[in-house]
Amino acid sequence: MKKTDTKSTPINTLKLTLPSLSVNEGIARTVTAAFCAYLGPTATDIADIKCAVSEAVTNCIVHAYKNTVGMIYITAEAFSSSTVKITIRDKGCGIADVKQARVPLFTTDAESERSGLGFTVMESFMDKLYVRSKIGRGTVVTMIKRLGNAATE
Amino acid sequence: MGSIKEKRNGQTLTVTLKGEIDHHSAVKMRSGIDKLLEESRPSTLILDLGSIEFMDSSGLGLIMGRYKKMNELGGELIVCNPSDSILKIFRLAGLGRFIKIQTK
Image (cartoon, rainbow over all chains, first blue to last red; front, side, top):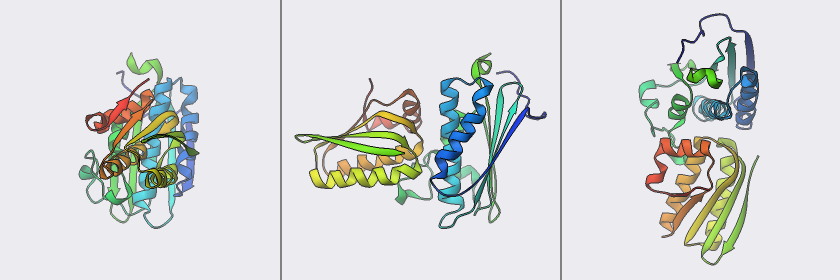
């Protein structure tokens, strides 16, 4: 894969703030996917992005703001290399052990039929995944993906 | 957003899932399927995913939960017609190791 330019100035930016209501899972992934559309993604890219965003937003609703409603801050930045950087931030409870949370099938909520594969999906469907979290302060998930045929050059 | 449609044929219950499966829609789909399972107690449950436009890992939770339910009932679960993107999620979970998956 060619070097991405996500440290330079983005050519376009989307900012979306939504309350942590489950109905917003669909809105978050649809709007983010629409933002990525002009970068020339493949159908698979769009499906991957939708899924990754859905996982991150669901984590905010199910875990970060468990039993409460808070705001979810989504930023998507487009770069000239057809790369997109998506940041999903919450001010929720935070993750005690990020390394453990990223282990496939790990879940703190087995009763609600959570599969424990949220981070695994994000990691597999995007090129890069960074998770920063602080207990009582919140979590920032950053995902980067190069889109279209450029991704395989 | 997501809906279900059922068809019974002897001991086989086929449930066709439509639309999108995420954490939001899975709750309603799950209770709908479980109600049908309680009523008809089938020996085979077929979940048809052919009309699903989107699914994230919440769909896995839904499928694995129904797999457990069918095990309790002494029956089997078959998942059919998953799209390529759904198959990708199945592979991450290694679902094919314990659930019968029929592709188109």
